Image (cartoon, rainbow, N blue to C red; front, side, top):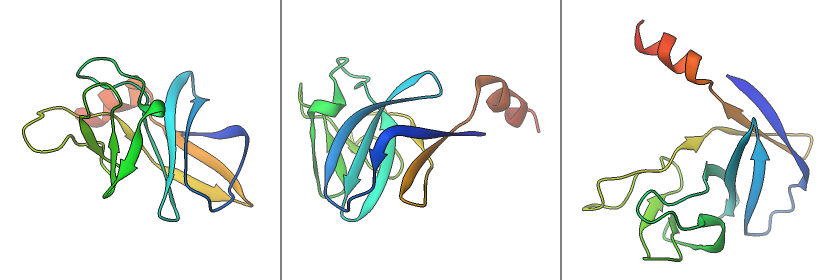
Length: 112
């Protein structure tokens, strides 16, 4: 896994939803209830931009059809049968870092 610093972003403690780039991926960075989460930025159902959504009860809500995804795991709500990628987040000296595992690393891990 490689860690990427989120450019031009500092932790403020305020809630937010922001589109960021890290490791060649466009991600949805969410600050919710004093935690920061990194998730995929597109809804798998209809391709909605999740950075235009909102959070409630620990879930990120898609603005298109209101599909919801757990902020910690990316798992869709019951009955959706889908998910979005979730990525680990670390905060060091007020800066945010997102951990991204390459496809090759995922393949190697699958054969262990």
